[in-house]
Amino acid sequence: METTKMARAALLSLAIATVFLLGWEGFWRSQGFIPTYNDDKALWAVKRKEVYQPPGSATVFIGSSRIKFNLDIPTWEKLSGEQAVQLALVGTSPILTLQDLAEDEKFAGKLVIDVTEPLFFSPNPAFHQSAQEAVGYYKKQTPSEKASSAISLALESKLAFLEERRFSLNTLLNDIPLPNRPGVFQFPAFPKGFEWTTADRQTYMSEMFLSDSSDLKRQTDIWTSLIMNSPAAPISGEELERVLAGVKNSVDKIRSRGGKVIFVRTPSSGPMEAGEHKAFPRSQYWNRLLEMADAAGIHYKDYPETANYVCPEWSHLSPADAIDYTTHLVKQLGEKGWFAMKPNILNP
Image 1 (cartoon, rainbow, N blue to C red):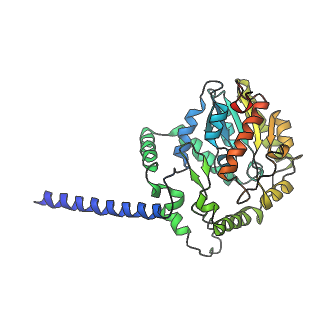
Image 2: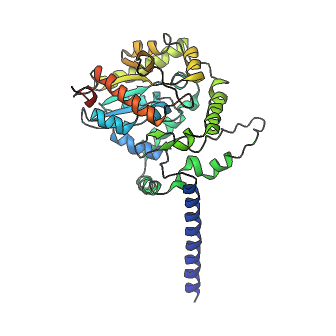
């Protein structure tokens, strides 16, 4: 009898939980949300394993959020005939990821490094934290964590409410506008449709975000608050030379194994672009980086076809412009001999 009661209680609990979860999922679907993936260290580790491709089969991308938004992976793969392995990390300098690949004796592939100057040339250690966590997780991932990751990815492909950056309890609480207490900073909540992520770690803006002027203003206000009104002084002098020397050392290690490395500067616009160009003059940062690393670079301002994009929130391309930009990037890389065979866009 006692066993029967426990079984009934368990079934009732399961039924209540199922009804709640279905209702929760249904509510967010009714608001226009779709299943997307958590852009976390587990998904990063999945892609990190894919860097060991035969020559001419793949290009690895590292950087910050811009290359995640601005590189349209289906377009890249269609035109180049290569896989795109997306290892960029939002709000993070690529320097530690570059070091990880440089120290990996098995990696001898092709690497595109996207440069967002306020992150790449900042002394703020917070801009390296995500890379430290992702690399550490990849190297020490346990069998149980791998199994959990596989299960999570399978569920995330079906259920919208599992996307933590939008629907976790902490995120939902952050949506409540409260003044910061003295000495306490609450990171502002991004609009929920701003960044959606695919299984390939491509990030894109949703149509609901692009069509909502209040969300667009909310995002530009966040950039103004976080970056433009309180910019960290960029590194310079001996500190800059030390960073550049470290980058050169990493690039040299990859090239010594037969790998290829190129730097790209993807578009920004409006007040963000103006502020970046003022704070990080090309002659002192971009040009010096290429000179020190003895590497080629592709800067969006050097090509008329990519020089004048208008980013909806100043910092990232819309999905439509990402397709256009990727088309030009494949062509630009092809002209620099990046591909073993001419990509489709260069074929006569």
